[in-house]
Image (cartoon, rainbow, N blue to C red; front, side):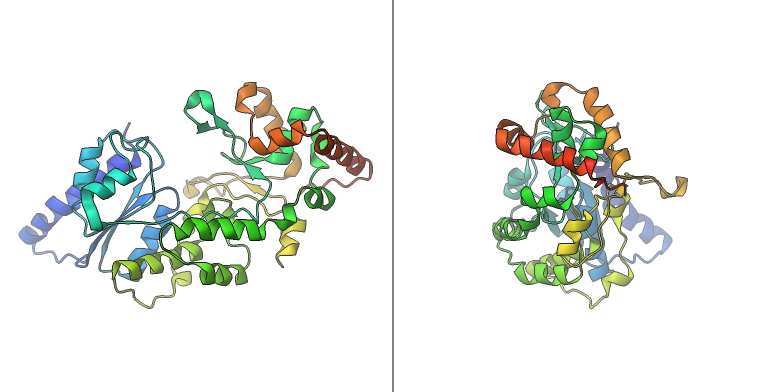
Length: 349
Protein backbone atom coordinates (compact mmCIF):
# COMPACT_ATOMS: atom_id res chain seq x y z
CA UNK A 1 0.00 0.00 0.00
CA UNK A 2 1.29 3.43 -0.94
CA UNK A 3 2.02 5.92 1.82
CA UNK A 4 1.27 9.63 1.54
CA UNK A 5 4.93 10.20 0.63
CA UNK A 6 4.65 7.74 -2.26
CA UNK A 7 1.52 9.46 -3.54
CA UNK A 8 3.19 12.87 -3.33
CA UNK A 9 6.23 11.60 -5.24
CA UNK A 10 3.92 10.52 -8.07
CA UNK A 11 2.12 13.89 -8.04
CA UNK A 12 5.43 15.73 -8.04
CA UNK A 13 6.73 14.04 -11.16
CA UNK A 14 3.40 14.55 -12.89
CA UNK A 15 3.34 18.28 -12.17
CA UNK A 16 7.06 18.71 -12.82
CA UNK A 17 7.44 16.67 -16.00
CA UNK A 18 3.98 16.22 -17.53
CA UNK A 19 1.82 19.25 -16.73
CA UNK A 20 4.14 21.89 -18.29
CA UNK A 21 4.22 19.89 -21.53
CA UNK A 22 0.44 19.52 -21.54
CA UNK A 23 0.05 23.24 -20.87
CA UNK A 24 2.31 24.02 -23.81
CA UNK A 25 0.29 21.77 -26.09
CA UNK A 26 -3.10 23.07 -24.94
CA UNK A 27 -2.15 26.70 -24.43
CA UNK A 28 -3.23 26.59 -20.78
CA UNK A 29 -1.53 29.16 -18.58
CA UNK A 30 0.08 27.71 -15.45
CA UNK A 31 -0.78 29.64 -12.31
CA UNK A 32 2.11 28.35 -10.18
CA UNK A 33 4.92 30.37 -11.73
CA UNK A 34 6.81 31.13 -8.52
CA UNK A 35 9.38 29.09 -6.58
CA UNK A 36 8.97 25.36 -6.04
CA UNK A 37 8.81 24.59 -2.32
CA UNK A 38 8.72 21.21 -0.58
CA UNK A 39 7.88 20.79 3.09
CA UNK A 40 8.82 17.40 4.55
CA UNK A 41 7.98 16.60 8.13
CA UNK A 42 5.66 15.26 10.77
CA UNK A 43 2.01 16.12 11.39
CA UNK A 44 2.87 19.83 11.69
CA UNK A 45 4.29 19.99 8.17
CA UNK A 46 0.94 20.40 6.41
CA UNK A 47 0.20 23.57 8.40
CA UNK A 48 3.61 24.97 7.49
CA UNK A 49 3.12 24.10 3.80
CA UNK A 50 -0.38 25.59 3.73
CA UNK A 51 0.84 28.80 5.36
CA UNK A 52 3.69 29.06 2.85
CA UNK A 53 1.21 28.81 -0.01
CA UNK A 54 -0.69 31.72 1.53
CA UNK A 55 2.53 33.69 1.79
CA UNK A 56 3.14 33.26 -1.95
CA UNK A 57 0.17 32.00 -3.95
CA UNK A 58 2.31 31.89 -7.10
CA UNK A 59 4.54 29.22 -5.54
CA UNK A 60 4.24 25.49 -5.97
CA UNK A 61 4.13 24.18 -2.40
CA UNK A 62 4.01 20.44 -1.77
CA UNK A 63 3.75 18.55 1.49
CA UNK A 64 5.68 15.31 2.10
CA UNK A 65 4.28 13.79 5.32
CA UNK A 66 6.82 11.80 7.31
CA UNK A 67 4.31 9.93 9.42
CA UNK A 68 4.34 6.43 7.86
CA UNK A 69 6.96 4.28 6.19
CA UNK A 70 7.15 4.77 2.43
CA UNK A 71 7.62 2.12 -0.24
CA UNK A 72 9.89 4.49 -2.17
CA UNK A 73 13.59 4.25 -1.44
CA UNK A 74 15.65 7.20 -0.28
CA UNK A 75 17.37 7.75 -3.63
CA UNK A 76 14.02 8.39 -5.33
CA UNK A 77 12.96 10.64 -2.45
CA UNK A 78 16.13 12.73 -2.85
CA UNK A 79 15.74 12.87 -6.63
CA UNK A 80 12.16 14.06 -6.21
CA UNK A 81 13.02 16.76 -3.69
CA UNK A 82 15.83 17.92 -5.96
CA UNK A 83 13.18 19.19 -8.38
CA UNK A 84 12.31 21.90 -5.81
CA UNK A 85 14.07 25.20 -5.22
CA UNK A 86 13.63 25.02 -1.44
CA UNK A 87 13.22 21.98 0.81
CA UNK A 88 12.09 22.69 4.37
CA UNK A 89 12.52 19.57 6.49
CA UNK A 90 11.93 18.39 10.02
CA UNK A 91 14.62 16.12 11.46
CA UNK A 92 13.63 12.53 10.64
CA UNK A 93 15.04 9.00 10.95
CA UNK A 94 15.45 6.43 8.20
CA UNK A 95 12.37 4.62 9.48
CA UNK A 96 10.18 6.75 7.19
CA UNK A 97 12.11 6.61 3.92
CA UNK A 98 14.26 3.46 3.78
CA UNK A 99 17.88 4.26 3.11
CA UNK A 100 18.41 7.67 4.63
CA UNK A 101 17.50 10.29 7.21
CA UNK A 102 17.36 14.09 7.38
CA UNK A 103 21.12 14.41 7.82
CA UNK A 104 21.72 12.38 4.67
CA UNK A 105 19.14 14.50 2.85
CA UNK A 106 21.05 17.67 3.77
CA UNK A 107 24.31 16.09 2.57
CA UNK A 108 22.76 15.18 -0.78
CA UNK A 109 20.93 18.45 -1.47
CA UNK A 110 23.16 20.91 0.37
CA UNK A 111 21.94 24.47 0.98
CA UNK A 112 18.63 23.69 -0.71
CA UNK A 113 17.58 21.97 2.54
CA UNK A 114 16.45 24.25 5.37
CA UNK A 115 15.90 22.29 8.62
CA UNK A 116 13.17 23.51 10.93
CA UNK A 117 11.89 22.44 14.36
CA UNK A 118 8.59 20.96 15.44
CA UNK A 119 6.79 23.00 18.09
CA UNK A 120 6.12 21.17 21.34
CA UNK A 121 4.89 22.69 24.60
CA UNK A 122 3.69 20.74 27.65
CA UNK A 123 2.48 23.41 30.10
CA UNK A 124 -1.16 23.32 28.98
CA UNK A 125 -1.34 19.51 29.02
CA UNK A 126 1.00 18.41 31.83
CA UNK A 127 -0.84 15.14 32.45
CA UNK A 128 -0.47 13.63 28.99
CA UNK A 129 2.14 11.01 28.23
CA UNK A 130 3.00 8.49 25.51
CA UNK A 131 3.30 4.74 25.94
CA UNK A 132 5.96 3.28 23.65
CA UNK A 133 5.95 -0.40 22.85
CA UNK A 134 9.54 -1.65 22.82
CA UNK A 135 8.43 -4.94 21.30
CA UNK A 136 7.06 -3.06 18.29
CA UNK A 137 9.99 -0.84 17.47
CA UNK A 138 9.01 1.96 19.83
CA UNK A 139 5.62 2.47 18.18
CA UNK A 140 3.00 4.11 20.38
CA UNK A 141 0.29 2.17 22.16
CA UNK A 142 -2.97 3.79 21.13
CA UNK A 143 -5.68 4.53 23.66
CA UNK A 144 -9.18 5.96 23.20
CA UNK A 145 -7.69 9.27 22.07
CA UNK A 146 -4.90 8.07 19.84
CA UNK A 147 -1.35 8.00 21.23
CA UNK A 148 -2.15 10.33 24.14
CA UNK A 149 -2.58 8.91 27.63
CA UNK A 150 -3.24 10.40 31.04
CA UNK A 151 -0.46 9.82 33.55
CA UNK A 152 -3.02 9.95 36.34
CA UNK A 153 -5.30 7.49 34.59
CA UNK A 154 -2.43 5.09 33.93
CA UNK A 155 -1.23 5.37 37.54
CA UNK A 156 -4.72 4.63 38.82
CA UNK A 157 -5.00 1.53 36.64
CA UNK A 158 -1.53 0.28 37.55
CA UNK A 159 -2.28 0.87 41.24
CA UNK A 160 -5.55 -1.06 41.10
CA UNK A 161 -7.86 1.90 41.74
CA UNK A 162 -11.42 1.81 40.43
CA UNK A 163 -12.50 4.02 37.54
CA UNK A 164 -14.41 6.18 40.04
CA UNK A 165 -11.28 6.60 42.18
CA UNK A 166 -9.27 7.43 39.05
CA UNK A 167 -11.86 10.08 38.19
CA UNK A 168 -11.40 11.62 41.63
CA UNK A 169 -7.70 12.18 40.96
CA UNK A 170 -8.60 14.93 38.48
CA UNK A 171 -8.78 17.74 40.97
CA UNK A 172 -6.80 20.87 41.77
CA UNK A 173 -5.25 19.51 44.95
CA UNK A 174 -3.72 16.63 42.99
CA UNK A 175 -2.49 18.95 40.24
CA UNK A 176 -0.88 21.17 42.86
CA UNK A 177 0.80 18.24 44.60
CA UNK A 178 2.26 16.97 41.33
CA UNK A 179 3.51 20.37 40.16
CA UNK A 180 1.17 20.57 37.19
CA UNK A 181 0.70 24.30 37.73
CA UNK A 182 4.43 25.02 37.65
CA UNK A 183 5.47 23.72 34.24
CA UNK A 184 5.34 26.91 32.20
CA UNK A 185 8.93 28.02 32.74
CA UNK A 186 10.34 24.53 32.16
CA UNK A 187 8.24 24.06 29.02
CA UNK A 188 9.33 27.46 27.70
CA UNK A 189 13.02 26.80 28.39
CA UNK A 190 12.78 23.44 26.66
CA UNK A 191 11.07 24.91 23.59
CA UNK A 192 13.48 27.84 23.26
CA UNK A 193 16.51 25.58 23.76
CA UNK A 194 15.30 23.20 21.08
CA UNK A 195 14.50 25.90 18.52
CA UNK A 196 17.87 27.53 19.26
CA UNK A 197 19.45 24.41 17.78
CA UNK A 198 18.04 25.65 14.47
CA UNK A 199 19.38 29.18 15.07
CA UNK A 200 15.86 30.45 15.77
CA UNK A 201 14.81 32.79 18.55
CA UNK A 202 11.03 32.50 18.95
CA UNK A 203 10.80 34.02 22.45
CA UNK A 204 8.76 37.00 21.24
CA UNK A 205 6.57 34.71 19.16
CA UNK A 206 5.76 32.54 22.19
CA UNK A 207 4.81 35.69 24.09
CA UNK A 208 2.48 36.67 21.25
CA UNK A 209 0.97 33.18 21.12
CA UNK A 210 0.32 33.16 24.87
CA UNK A 211 -1.55 36.45 24.55
CA UNK A 212 -3.98 34.64 22.27
CA UNK A 213 -4.72 32.04 24.92
CA UNK A 214 -4.19 28.28 24.74
CA UNK A 215 -1.99 27.85 21.66
CA UNK A 216 -1.69 24.05 21.61
CA UNK A 217 -4.23 21.28 20.87
CA UNK A 218 -1.91 18.86 22.70
CA UNK A 219 1.74 18.77 23.73
CA UNK A 220 2.77 18.20 20.10
CA UNK A 221 -0.02 19.80 18.04
CA UNK A 222 0.07 23.61 17.80
CA UNK A 223 -2.85 25.75 16.70
CA UNK A 224 -2.68 27.10 13.12
CA UNK A 225 -1.50 30.61 13.98
CA UNK A 226 1.62 29.12 15.59
CA UNK A 227 2.53 27.30 12.38
CA UNK A 228 1.71 30.41 10.37
CA UNK A 229 4.21 32.46 12.35
CA UNK A 230 6.84 29.75 11.97
CA UNK A 231 6.23 29.70 8.20
CA UNK A 232 6.88 33.46 8.04
CA UNK A 233 10.13 33.00 9.96
CA UNK A 234 11.24 30.26 7.58
CA UNK A 235 10.31 32.31 4.52
CA UNK A 236 12.48 35.12 5.79
CA UNK A 237 15.36 32.74 6.49
CA UNK A 238 15.19 31.42 2.93
CA UNK A 239 15.14 34.95 1.47
CA UNK A 240 11.62 34.49 0.10
CA UNK A 241 9.22 37.40 -0.13
CA UNK A 242 6.05 36.96 1.92
CA UNK A 243 2.75 38.59 1.08
CA UNK A 244 1.10 40.65 3.87
CA UNK A 245 -1.77 38.18 4.18
CA UNK A 246 -4.04 37.78 7.22
CA UNK A 247 -3.73 34.03 7.67
CA UNK A 248 -6.48 33.88 10.30
CA UNK A 249 -9.01 34.52 7.53
CA UNK A 250 -7.82 31.58 5.44
CA UNK A 251 -6.41 28.92 7.74
CA UNK A 252 -7.46 25.29 7.60
CA UNK A 253 -7.37 23.83 11.11
CA UNK A 254 -5.84 20.58 9.88
CA UNK A 255 -4.62 19.32 13.26
CA UNK A 256 -8.07 19.93 14.76
CA UNK A 257 -9.27 16.96 12.72
CA UNK A 258 -7.03 14.79 14.88
CA UNK A 259 -7.24 14.25 18.62
CA UNK A 260 -7.67 17.35 20.78
CA UNK A 261 -6.75 17.02 24.41
CA UNK A 262 -8.60 19.04 27.05
CA UNK A 263 -6.91 21.63 29.20
CA UNK A 264 -8.14 20.75 32.67
CA UNK A 265 -10.27 23.57 34.18
CA UNK A 266 -7.99 24.38 37.11
CA UNK A 267 -4.95 24.47 34.83
CA UNK A 268 -6.70 26.59 32.20
CA UNK A 269 -7.74 29.06 34.89
CA UNK A 270 -4.08 29.65 35.73
CA UNK A 271 -3.62 30.93 32.17
CA UNK A 272 -6.79 33.01 32.06
CA UNK A 273 -8.65 30.50 29.90
CA UNK A 274 -11.65 28.19 30.22
CA UNK A 275 -10.87 24.50 30.33
CA UNK A 276 -12.83 21.27 30.54
CA UNK A 277 -12.75 17.50 30.35
CA UNK A 278 -13.94 16.92 26.79
CA UNK A 279 -11.67 14.57 24.85
CA UNK A 280 -12.04 14.91 21.07
CA UNK A 281 -11.55 11.74 19.03
CA UNK A 282 -9.72 11.68 15.71
CA UNK A 283 -12.03 12.43 12.76
CA UNK A 284 -10.51 13.17 9.35
CA UNK A 285 -13.54 12.37 7.18
CA UNK A 286 -15.79 15.32 7.95
CA UNK A 287 -18.24 14.38 5.19
CA UNK A 288 -19.17 11.29 7.20
CA UNK A 289 -20.40 13.05 10.32
CA UNK A 290 -19.37 15.51 12.98
CA UNK A 291 -17.17 13.15 14.98
CA UNK A 292 -17.34 12.06 18.59
CA UNK A 293 -16.13 13.04 22.05
CA UNK A 294 -15.63 11.48 25.46
CA UNK A 295 -16.12 12.98 28.89
CA UNK A 296 -13.66 12.10 31.66
CA UNK A 297 -15.44 9.01 33.07
CA UNK A 298 -15.92 7.65 29.54
CA UNK A 299 -12.29 8.33 28.68
CA UNK A 300 -11.04 6.57 31.82
CA UNK A 301 -13.35 3.59 31.37
CA UNK A 302 -12.11 3.18 27.80
CA UNK A 303 -8.49 3.45 28.97
CA UNK A 304 -9.05 0.75 31.58
CA UNK A 305 -10.53 -1.56 28.95
CA UNK A 306 -7.56 -1.03 26.60
CA UNK A 307 -5.01 -1.40 29.40
CA UNK A 308 -6.71 -4.60 30.54
CA UNK A 309 -6.11 -6.11 27.12
CA UNK A 310 -2.49 -4.95 26.86
CA UNK A 311 0.75 -6.56 27.94
CA UNK A 312 2.38 -5.29 31.11
CA UNK A 313 5.44 -4.08 29.18
CA UNK A 314 3.19 -1.88 27.05
CA UNK A 315 2.04 0.12 30.06
CA UNK A 316 5.33 1.66 31.12
CA UNK A 317 5.97 5.37 31.30
CA UNK A 318 8.94 6.89 33.16
CA UNK A 319 6.85 9.43 35.07
CA UNK A 320 4.27 6.91 36.20
CA UNK A 321 7.01 4.42 37.07
CA UNK A 322 8.60 7.03 39.33
CA UNK A 323 5.29 7.63 41.12
CA UNK A 324 4.75 3.92 41.63
CA UNK A 325 8.31 3.42 42.87
CA UNK A 326 8.12 6.26 45.39
CA UNK A 327 6.06 5.04 48.35
CA UNK A 328 5.24 8.52 49.64
CA UNK A 329 3.97 9.77 46.29
CA UNK A 330 2.05 6.58 45.56
CA UNK A 331 0.31 6.54 48.93
CA UNK A 332 -0.44 10.27 48.70
CA UNK A 333 -2.19 9.86 45.34
CA UNK A 334 -4.21 6.85 46.48
CA UNK A 335 -5.34 8.72 49.61
CA UNK A 336 -6.26 11.82 47.59
CA UNK A 337 -8.28 9.73 45.15
CA UNK A 338 -10.28 8.07 47.91
CA UNK A 339 -10.79 11.25 49.90
CA UNK A 340 -11.91 13.22 46.85
CA UNK A 341 -14.33 10.45 45.94
CA UNK A 342 -15.84 10.49 49.43
CA UNK A 343 -16.29 14.27 49.14
CA UNK A 344 -17.93 13.92 45.75
CA UNK A 345 -15.13 15.82 43.99
CA UNK A 346 -15.44 13.93 40.72
CA UNK A 347 -15.63 15.92 37.48
CA UNK A 348 -17.71 14.43 34.68
CA UNK A 349 -17.00 16.82 31.78
